[in-house]
Length: 321
Ligand SMILES: Nc1ncnc2c1ncn2[C@@H]1O[C@H](COP(=O)(O)OP(=O)(O)O)[C@@H](O)[C@H]1O
Ligand SMILES: [Mg+2]
Image 1 (cartoon, rainbow, N blue to C red):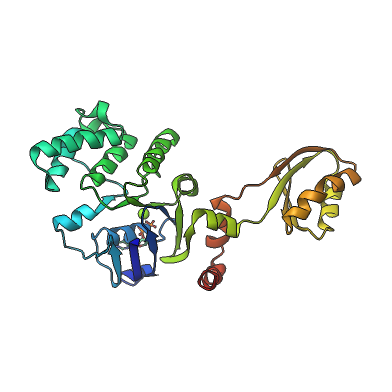
Image 2: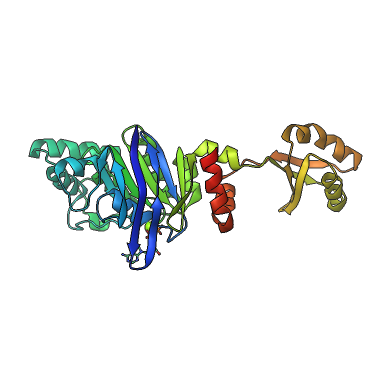
């Protein structure tokens, strides 16, 4: 069962195609990182999924329901929680008041709304600030409150637009930890242009570029599939000679000079692990450091997104595998 499913979802702004025939599927219970550079069409997609703007064509099913803008039945509102990129609040309200107000909008009785507000403040770690006015809140606190408000209707799907992007490292870690802790409570679709954020909390990844889905897959599979086995090597002595010795071996695909040493891109991981020590010994150099390079989402992203000519190949590859 998919929590979100779009078919050929398209949104034009005049002649600009912000979202271009987007087909995406978010399995239930995942934290789906919706990645893409600025201007890729993430916000436009999330607004369509939240029912805030209309698609020019195509369909979007969210929690089994087709999203239609303008439909604001209580049932629909409570299926989907949305945190905007730059959320607005009533600054004179306290955090508690804002939550009670929103819970009431979702149909809770006054008594139930109070209890719900307290519960949500606890979930997002804002209980100590419950009676403080939002006007004095830091960006991180506003994001946490925004997540609490998005959770007020107990949604099946939580749409978070760049929830951590504008925060400092500590605020960012707090929000990402909070998002992780919500896993299992709702399916989470989180947009970001920050690779590291998605790598930290995501379980699935969809990469959007110029309004089109370039690749969509479980995060681990993606890292595995696009990762080339590589080692980082630090040696004393003449690098040039070691480099040419390495390049003469069939298990070496490439050697790149990088900070403090060499990066060896292996075509045969096992053979590389077996043979590297004897090669260095034969070259009379000492080994200062040897490490397997763990592939990052950044490696994958750069390979896929920055090389636009590749986008169609990658798509084709994805369809055929
Ligand atoms: N309301 C709008 N009117 C005109 N163009 C828009 C509007 N909203 C977004 N766009 C354009 O659509 C493209 C995608 O924008 P957006 O969805 O905000 O991307 P992202 O969130 O990935 O940065 C951009 O080129 C942007 O300028
Ligand atoms: Mg955006």
